[in-house]
Image (cartoon, rainbow, N blue to C red):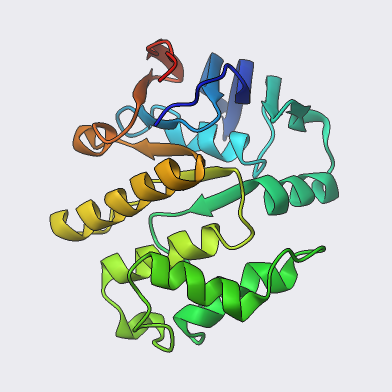
Length: 236
């Protein structure tokens, strides 16, 4: 479901990223411009080394661009210090990674509750919120299981629940099905689509999988650090 308005929750303007590799400078991004609108699910696709993950990291405030502007909900994050970026990430962005990044000694419930416990101004009761999210994602009977006791698809759904813990308006997913079999990947994608449609969450997925991209409202193609196609968003 795409949004009915033209509010760009993510605005990227003339963004470049140059990475030093010994004596060589690698231009990971070359003047990227794009808008992503409230409630969209957008896939950024391209071959390995095209700059997809670099772009996602910049949008999420995990790194800073060499030049250009990135705005999250109208706020320019390129001029923020680390404390300010941490606050933006906690309040506005949920991250989903290819390798799950769950804490192995904690249960599914404890993994999901953790971001709430670390929030400066918690919005929810950690255990109650974690349980509700795990039930939403079909894991109500796995709340006491540790990651080693869960399948790959179940672990990724725990990671999605954790990303949603503080109710961020934006979800950023880096190859979220990259380590999953086809059936598990389908379950995870359907879960992301359900979340987007039911809560109007903006979802950005970085992937090289064109099948995954077919679940999205639109696709942005990145090659050699440049956008080569980006269909214009239309109102639903």
